[in-house]
Image (cartoon, rainbow over all chains, first blue to last red; front, side, top):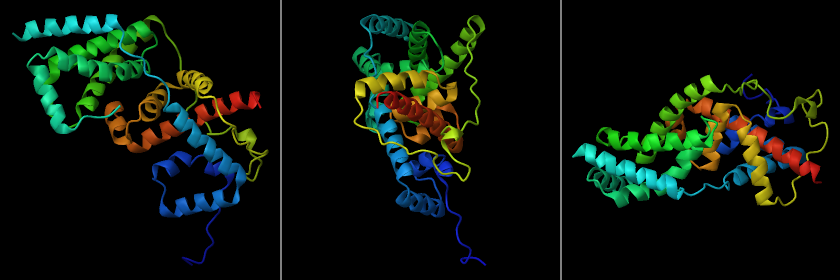
Length: 87
Length: 201
């Protein structure tokens, strides 16, 4: 009967597949509740999710290099060329 | 990197059309580094990525009249980069084939780490403070080793910080597909960091 059947608990192995969906907020309300219930009772998965969050943060700190002077010069020349085309 | 507001953008586009060199160079400084990183998720050699960026800018200038503001200028430019890079990647693959066909249904965590009932076989150790500079090297290498689409999604989402709808637009992916690719990419980068940190524990 609906409402009486006990919800199946998430296993650790299932949880690790859902972390991005959890972060993105795309889990159904039910799955989100199962996810959080599992986290509340499982230190290993809590550590795992913390690692995952740290991974996303660290990935966001990768450097973007500046435009090299040579590349900038080439693009300026290209721009001038395009302007001539337009005229 | 912030996205200019729509009004700023139309002013910028108007300046470009009018041939304003400074407006062009501002845009180049703001977007070229990210464009180059995106190009490098399609093509392998830095020199080819530089070509892609240059060719893309020419495409941007020549296509300005077709820009209608339905997407942000940045998204529109990145779509041009993706198209140019895709074409170049095909050519590059013909001359120097490389394979990145890692199986596409891998688990987020090595199945060996779990026991039969789905619980962890051994404790997951929390990471101690990570040295960012060293971690960045590990992440760079892990991303370079990813299958192409995973590399593209994590580059735009996590390295460059784009929202998912714009990533889907640039890479022509469904939301669901994008999320799956992102999750696989992040899982592998996490595993690489864990391995690196584990070796130092």
